[in-house]
Every structure is written in C-alpha cells, then in structure tokens.
Image (cartoon, rainbow, N blue to C red; front, top):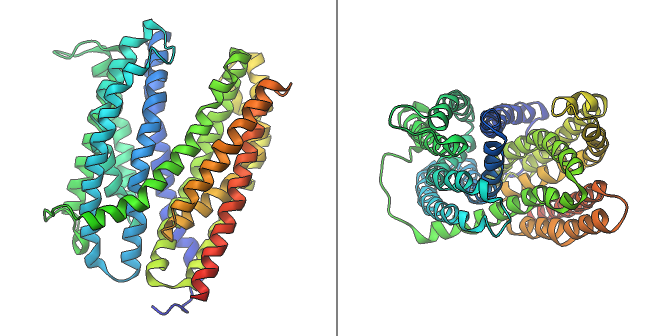
Length: 450
C-alpha cells in the first residue's frame, strides 16, 4: 500500500472496537482470577486472606514485568502483517516463545526465593507458612504464563482476540473447583488453605497455555502463519530484537503499576481507616483503567499494522481516532464515578469512616481519568511504532523521580494525609501524559518528513 493511502473514520472505529471489546473482557476475566482467590480465601479465615494478600502483592509485580516484556510480540507481528510479509511471522513467534520460556524460568526462580524476603518485610510469623507455600506453588506457572502471553500477542496482532477471551472466561469457571480441591483437600491432595490457590493458579496457567497452543495448531485461520508446526533453534539476532523492544515495555508497566501499589505503604503510619479507604479508591480506579488499557492494546495493533505498511497518513488517523475515543470513554467514566461514588464504595465496605474517606479520595481518581486515558493511549501508539525505550524513561521519571517523593512529602509532612499520595499520582500522570504525547507528535513528524 502506498504511504499516501487513506482510511475512513468508520472503518477504523470498527477495527478498534473489534479488537478492544474482546481484549477488555479478557482483562476483566484476568482481574476475576484474583477476585475469586480473595473471596474464597476470605471465607476460610482472616489469616488465609492476609496470606493471599501478601503472596499476591509480591507475585503480581513479577508477573506483570515478565509478561509485559512479551508484549513485544504484538507490534512485531502487526508490523510484519502490515508489511505483507507473513513469512516472517512464524519465526517471530517461535523466537518469542524461546524468550518467554527463558523469562518464565527466571521469574519462577525469583518467586521461589521470594519467601526469604518475607521476614525482612515484616510479615507476621503466623502468615509465613501459607504465604511462602503460595509463592512456591504459583511460581511453577510462570513459564506457562509468559508463553501464553506470547501466543496471545500473536493471535491479537492478527486480529483474532476472541479465542483469548473465550479461554479466559472458561478458565474462570475452572478456577473455582480447582481452588476448592487444593484449598480444602480432596483424596490424596491435602488441605492447604489459601496456599492452595497458588497450586490451582499454576495448573490453570498451564491449562490455558496448552489450550491456546492446541487451538492455534488446529484452527484454519492460523495456518498461513502457523508457528507451532516446525521446531526452530534460537536466533540470537531476533531474540535480541525482541528483548530490545520488550524489556522497556515490561519495565514501563512495572514502574506504573508499582507506583500505585506503594500508596498503602506510604499511608500505613496514618492508620487502618486511611489505608482501607485508599485501597478501595485504588481498586475502583484499577478496574476502570482496563477500559483505556484495552483501547491502548488495540491501538498498538492498528498502529503497528500501518507502521509495517509505512502508511503514515492512516497511522496518524487511527492515532487521532484512538485519542478521541479514549477521551470520550474517560468523560463518561468521570461522570459515572461522580454520580455513583457512594454506591460504589458501599459495595466495598459498610464502615462509615472508611466510606467517607474513600468517597473523598475517588474525587482525585476522577481528576486524573483524562490524563490516564491520554498517556496510556499514547504509550500504546508508540509501542505500535516500536518506540519503547523513550516511554520507559518517561514513566520512570514521571512516577518514581517526581510522583513518589511528592506523594510521600504531601502525605507525611503536610496536613493533606491520604490526599497527598493522590496529588502525587495526578502530578506524575500529568507529566507522563504530556511527555508521551510530545514524543508521539515528534515521531509522527519525523516519519512524515522522512
């Protein structure tokens, strides 16, 4: 296709929604795994729930870092698809699977050693056995998860997100009996309490990976670029390219997620009411963040496809449509959060003091919805253009060099309290938003001039 070819707004909206909505359902299903673990552990005992919270708090950052690296598969496959070079796709996926296997093993070893840190982190001795067993068990699922992330990126980049969605929803149904078996014991399987969730999750990750692998191997739609029929040795040049693109993505996701998860630590000296209210507000905004994040993943695919075609006009158009769509979603989200704040908080707690603080903190979450939507959409477009190193540095500086110290200072050394952490987040997101949009503009300008 000529780099002067154009596309229509209607066509691009249709393509974005075709990709976005299945990805959104997949993201909500992924969040559902943790919700099911929390609910089932909570029905056992407060100690089991606390042990799960400790284990998940260490597991999730490792999971997001290493699976984030494998997002590199998506823009690489999208570029090859857009460049009408389907013969390159099988090697990209096979080499990505090698990377995913190696990274999964490294992640598994990291999680196996995590229990040694628990006493140093001040985890109560009563929680150590279950939290440690949870981490030991769930570690064995990491190679499956990173390889599953690779195949997911391959399928979505070709425009087939629905198989991933279906597998995710079916996995939710399988998780409940698996959790029950390992938590309460059945036959030769002993009663493991909340630690059983770790075994169930690891097994489920392998089931999901094998199911997706079998589907890709059999389904007709993948035969033209079939990556699983031929064994391929490691290609150091392609592996280096995958890591060069993917490592900054994983680190950028880690920087962003971790800044939100540290809020409870910063606020811990202010008492349990403040921490509980903060966690409710973070939970609400984390669930809503899946909407712009799903749009950003769709933008990565569409931008990557036009990047491969060298169709800069269409690429800029899809970026503009994506940013406008993200803006509209954010405005609707802000309105609903404003109107439904008391109702939303009441679903989390009946404690009056906690509710009042949480309703207040959600105002700050409303304040950064637009910036959050713009920054994640810009980052998605930049990934599609295979620009990942710049966004990594931007997120690190915005969140950890600026937002983190601002949040600590305002929360602990002024009378702002919990609001100080949220002001820090707003400052960090605003800076990241501006810098990422500027970088996107400069990249588009450079490509147009070239």
